[in-house]
Image 1 (cartoon, helix red, strand yellow):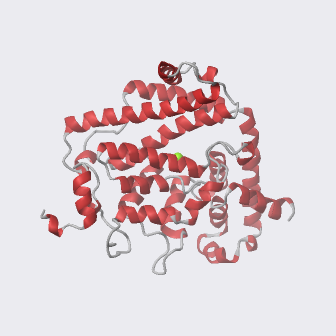
Image 2: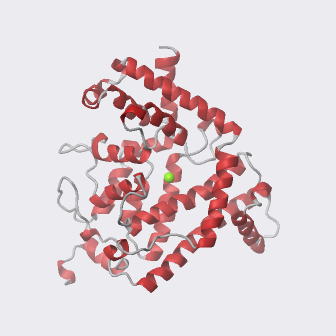
Image 3: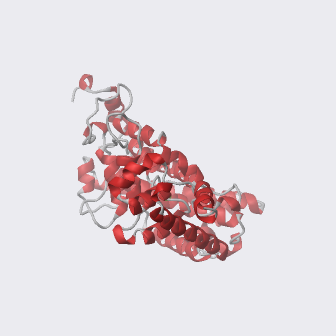
Length: 373
Ligand code: MG
């Protein structure tokens, strides 16, 4: 193709991306067609639309694993998302994938999270059992296609097919026959890279587990040994930080090395070539096993820690009471939600309204409508 006929965005991608990346001019476009922007590619526009959405901003008030009362060191849903986007872009750039698409997918991946993390999701899922349940991945799609109001012409953000399809893959990873785009698989890997590292950091910092206890895990032991080769006298705090650094570095390096080798051997000529192959973007078997061991430990010793279990039960109770209260008294919905309540029904509206709340707003509303109605 003659370069004169290519836009600036296309020319840039021709220079920087590998043949197996998703190129902007290969996008299947948007539900509501729009003219191309003069200097922002379609995935860059998607990234910006997500960044400017209210659901994205509310991530700062939603917990990742640990609640706000536990301090201000640990990750929120927003800082987790930023870490995922950064890690994913680092890997994507090294592998020649489309960084704009990666960033859009990463910023979007958790926007559907309700208050109180997975505990909140489980409670809402129970409340919605009679009408299909609740999943944060599905809700992210509802937000992006229906609930955000930023344009006069349509509701939702009118994102590209690729970003919406990437989010759809998260709903049921087993369902689709074809593999997701490499950029989609990469964001998934970056999500797990990030939470394995930052949950280790936060859990030690909060005193839920000790560094010594975590040294029983192969990945942590190897990482600490690596740090000690370079630094002989780190105090405990610096060691924890060096460990987190090493955990991320180890996983990112492994992904780049493993995938780089595979890409060279397989010589994919397009994104479709990669999607139709049996290639799965991931770590080598040894690191996968080490990650599984770490994740089992985090699940048993951190996510199920007695301090967290109580907070989680209280939060779930709060959400269930609010759901019931809204179902009994739909006039409590703010005025602007009344139309939608009529359209989708009061119980679904209650789920959507609660799911959009930040943790603190949820507590305030609970006090106002349940504790002191
Ligand atoms: Mg995540």
